[in-house]
Image 1 (cartoon, rainbow, N blue to C red):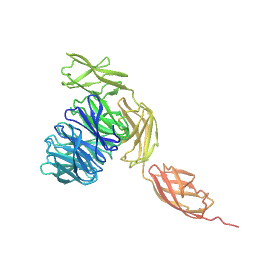
Image 2: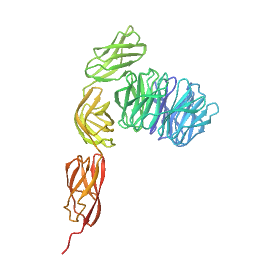
Image 3: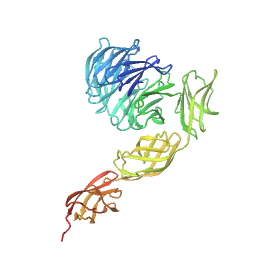
Image 4: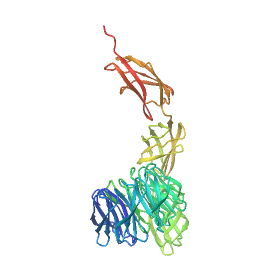
Length: 530
C-alpha cells in the first residue's frame, strides 16, 4: 500500500478495489479474491479518490494538488488522459448512464461537470466553499454535494443548477446513499454526527451521534447498516438503519477514512490512513458484540439462507425474526465469551462468523469533573473497566464526543448543557450501561471587582475578588505568577499577592473550567526605604 491512503472504491463486479494514496501519489489496485495489491499506478500530486464508470472500464481519479481529474483505463491500469478542473478536486461521482462525472473542488466554490465522451469540462456549478463529498441518485436526476461552509447542495442534473440546500450538522464533508436512493447519510466532522436525509423531501429526519472526526460512510448492500470511520479514536461505528442508533464501535487501524462494502455485504474494506493499510472487516454478523444478557438485534449475512430452521450462538438458539436468501435478522440469546454463529438450512449447517459477549462496563473516576455550561474542547478522562468499544457517553442529556477509548479509559469532549449544575455520567457499550459519576456544568465566570488593587512589591496583600461563577476557581495569577487563594463562595475569592521584582501595574487572571478570565489589574508599589 502507498502512503496516506484516502478513499477506496470497489469495481462494479466486486473483483477489485482502488485506493488513492495521497502521500505517495499512486493508486493501489487490490484483488478482492486474495486481498493483495496487484498493481500500483503512478498519478499526479495528491490523489484523493477514484470514481468508476458503471461498466468498470474507466476510473476518474481526483488529483488534488495538480488540479486534475485523470482518466484510468482499468484494463491496462494506465492513465490515458488528464482533465484540468478547479482547485483542489476532492471527490467524483459518475452518472448511472456513464456520460458525465461530477467533481467537487474543496479549494474552490464550484462543481465541475465532465463529458466522458470528450473528457472535457462542459460546465461548472456554483455551490459554495468547501465542496467535498458528492453522490448521484440511482435514477441520475440529482447530485448531492457536501459543502462544509453551507450544508448539502442538491443539484438538478438536467439543468445543472442548485435547487435546494439541506442544513445538516456542523461541517458536513462526506456522503452515502442507500441502495434504493431513499436516504442520504452525511458525516458531520464538526459535530461528530451522521445526518439522515429523506431524499423525497430533502429534509433531515435524524442526527446519529458517532465519535470524533467522522469520515467516509458506507451503506451495506441490503441497506440495513451504515459504517462510519472515526479517524480520531480509530473506530468504525455501526449504525442500524432501522433504529438509527449506533449498535457497535469496532476498533480498527490508525486513522480510518475510506470505507466500502463488498458486493455481497460479507466484508468491508477500511482505509487506515495513518497506518498506511487497508483492513478487512468480516460483516457477516452485525453487530458482532452484545450483552451477556442477550436481546440485541443481529443481522447475519451470507448465501443460501432461505428457510433457515435454526441460528445458534454457540449452543444457544437465536430467535429468527426475518429471513431472505442472503440475510437473517435474529435476536441474540444470552451467553458469554466468543462463540461461533451457525445457520442450519435444509442443505446443512454452516458457520458464518463469531459473536463476542461483552461484560457490562463499570466507572471509577472522571477528571476534570466540571466544565463550562457552554461545552468545551478540553479533554475529559473517564476511567473504569470494560470501556473498549464504547458506543455513547452522556453527561445528563448532553452527548459527549468520544475522542479515544481503551478497556480502562475513555477520553471525551463535553458538549453544552441546558443549564448549570451536576448531571449523571452514563457510558454505554455493547455490554450495557454504567453510571455512578457526576459531572458539573458551571456558569461562565465574571469578575466585577478586585479590592484592594494596590500593595507593596514584597507581596502579602490579601485581595478580595468578587463576581459570579467563582466556585470552581483553579488558579489566580498576578502577572503570570500563581498566588495563594481560597474560594469563599460562588461570588467571592480571596488571593494573596506574590512578591514582585519591580513596581508597576500587572494583570490579575483567574483560571477556572472555562479557561482564563482577566479580573483586572493590581499595582505594585515600592517598599519604603530608610
